[in-house]
Image 1: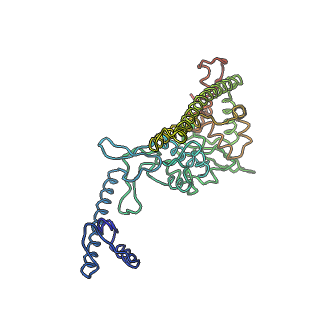
Image 2 (image 1 turned 90 degrees about the vertical axis):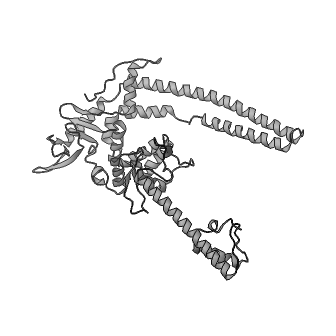
Image 3 (image 1 turned 30 degrees about the vertical axis):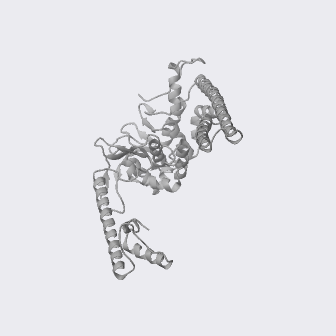
Length: 434
């Protein structure tokens, strides 16, 4: 029994197939709003009704697709928001999407990690998962979904549907999460090309500063070159721009300048000691606060569990409560217990060997030049990116410099002007670009 034949099947072929299978089992199809029977005329009417239902369904689908195409042509997204976006209302009152404030930055970070060429897809996915990237169902993003995400042009603001071949890609009317350049770099990495150079050149152990360092005269990424002498070949770093007149710099001289820059960035021992004391002080304070919060939450949880025991006692042994009241009270108390247990879990700080982390950080900061010299090409590139996220520039007059240094250096630079009850030494003055 169905309300109407249009609710039974979406096309006439499926209708005939399913009614035939039902009749073989002795089942007869009836409609609450339409009349037909097993006579020749009734079967004809039934088939006509099924065909009309298919026509109506097809017309609705065509109208829907036409409306969706029109919206896409205007730059509006008409499907379920992809991961990293959320549904919103634009200034004209139309449904649109906007970057998710929680997932959007993590997805941008994923593109940056893959686009750098220094991390595999698996490593990038692991890093952003550890940072908190989850699906809408609070599950980790699968490798297949991550692969599709990295190739989806919607993240840089381009709309298109492959199954609608007659629709040209359109620029979206919402804010993109990544730039066109970053998406192209990611695609080149996925294709094994990356950054307009071959993987071999990018990871050439003879030139670890290639692309990472930029020309101090024009800002173009530095490349490498070889000069053939009478008896051997000589390595140089040079500017990629043909319009720049910056001369070639011998590899040994160029990397020696970078090592001097690393040595100049090393914080003074007293600053590292001050940083250690501040971190330990803050960590211990957080541990104390977390312990107090856990004790309060545990007392609240114990009180709720005792309250539930009293409700069970009143229902089972004393018969004070009826079944309906008991069910309502237990459902309410179970919800409160679940919330209390969740809050108690969130109040627990992760176990962390802070002393070990600080020791390792001090070792890296104090020996960055030596570590860079002894590291492999992959380790060199990761250390460079860690210390100087935006790369470095080299000027023959001023030497190496950078517009952005690692957060740890910025913190250590800020220590002299911050009040601390631990100590107040002075004197950390890294060589920075003018």
